[in-house]
Length: 112
Image (cartoon, rainbow, N blue to C red; front, top):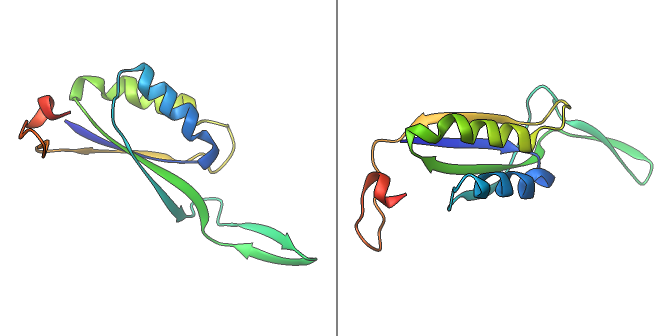
């Protein structure tokens, strides 16, 4: 099993969710996060004054999937989240040793 963490632009959430649901992914966790990469923030104007926003608002989507689904899920997220501009985000893949569904006690792939 693998855990996929994708950092995306907030307005791309619905597109990514639809892409994952179309692949049969039935659960995900979404968190509001802040950070910066190559963008290094952006300059904003408020009442005539300029200021730099160093940490940009992003969303982090987390899903745990079977090993066989990794390539299709990566492709779906990347296509749905892409705008072609700097700051589109990143996708991280990590191994998951075990999963337990609390309600039923099911483990691993049956718990997904």
